[in-house]
Image (cartoon, rainbow, N blue to C red; front, side):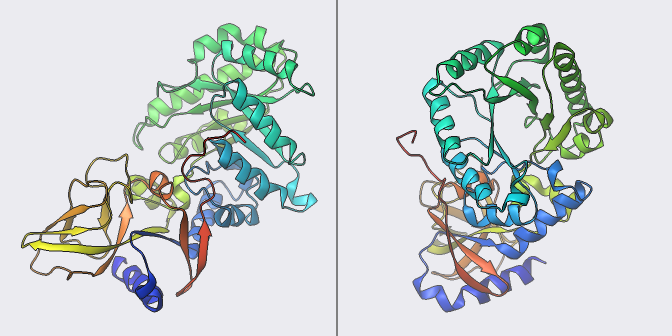
Length: 390
């Protein structure tokens, strides 16, 4: 399988090889479309059961593929991603746009809150949902909404910490405040959000226990008068447990999973790839730039090119199982030789990232592969960081 993919990539890039600056990101659109279809099938054929996190892709070319497949609810973490998602959904026709919504799943300070509302005002036909990080944060959001010009009544999900200890309040704290929060006059608390990215594929009991807590909180909020309509859970490691959880899918709400890495694939989601039948869609082209050592070569794909947040090995060399990536530096990736043959100086290799989300974020644009040829490039509009909120 890897050899066939390598041959296809080599053939597609051959006419452009002399112009190609490496490292370079390439995305296989055929694989992307396959992966979108695979997730929707795993959701029982219901695109509405999936709210993918677009931190993985950060570009309109792939968001367009999602919305074309009927996925019209998205999740994001930055204002740049929010702007991109709102624009992609706003471009839909009226019938397809019904229910289109973006969940900004990140706790906002006051200035960012107003910036998010301003972005949403540019796309009034697309819904925006925000996240309350704690009961105290919910009260701040309520105050900020009252002071907005004009006054706003934003839709809110409560962020529940299921053990990741990153953001959100634990279930017991939310339960203690449920009745008071339901009475807030400037917010519409419509959902509960619980991300359990700290759990692995096999920690199904812990995942199920977290979902039990989300269901209990949602029921308490409904009893207090909050119009809970959504429960959003699960990334690329726990979605099977969520889809199988009877109460998540059986309540008076819509349950959605939110894996995004599955769109492009990487080494970290191997279990999901097997479960869904995913195809690897993202590759980094890299060249051999040193053969000075007989037992090592060096590629031009260091931490500024691939998986900067991951320990070594940060990638796998497609079609070369005898090459073992070592600890990278900023621009260099040393590779240990484990066999008798090795690629020569200047040879083009294809790398599969260990973490695709942080890899995509490093690039200004991606080459797009369709069939057997490169059909263009896609600006990665939400990559990196901008200094202004708007």
